[in-house]
Image (cartoon, rainbow, N blue to C red):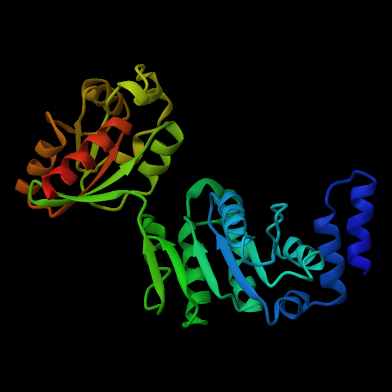
Length: 302
């Protein structure tokens, strides 16, 4: 009652939702409040560097047609915010919580979730989360302690490759495409703006890399955005560049000290990589290149 009153007063005096303060009070009075208030209810946890709030909101909207859904919809995703949201969710039989990456292990332990959804891990929070691999290790240890809990994981994120190792019920979802081409398996990733290009470059595994840059229609006709991308993560890597604006891309990566070779098509890139003894490659592709590649493969399968 005290925690609920604090939250209500905060809203009345326009000081925000009061989630942090009311959650702190609740946990100070009842340290096991999260465990106690989730007992007997179905819990879904969503965590990752990006997309927690939007993913949790979509899940709540879908499940809300059938269940009474509660959760931390204000986005307060530390233990205090989750505790505060439970004060307001007494009638909910399904709870969906977005959880801060560092707090996920403890929240898994306290809530015994029915499902854990892991989106991604990236370096944009290094000032707070230290080395990303440390977070991945903590996630792995947390899941190892509950081997029967179903997990859905982003299979395209290399930082998550070890998180679900040896875990039982895992569903891996890829957000790109994989096409056999030129004798190798090519993993296609759609990158549509400087931010997604940067994230794509940072999350590459050790395979050869293909950059496919077009500038038509939905790609945008101006390739000056290339100068907003830091290509230094490609230094020392096996890089092949193709696409309608391959010369623009080649000049840009050259100035970042990246070695590369130029070819006329994605198929030529795959063939060259195959001849050099590799069996896999990763391709970062602009919109139209991604569509062209996936359409061509579908046509061959038919």
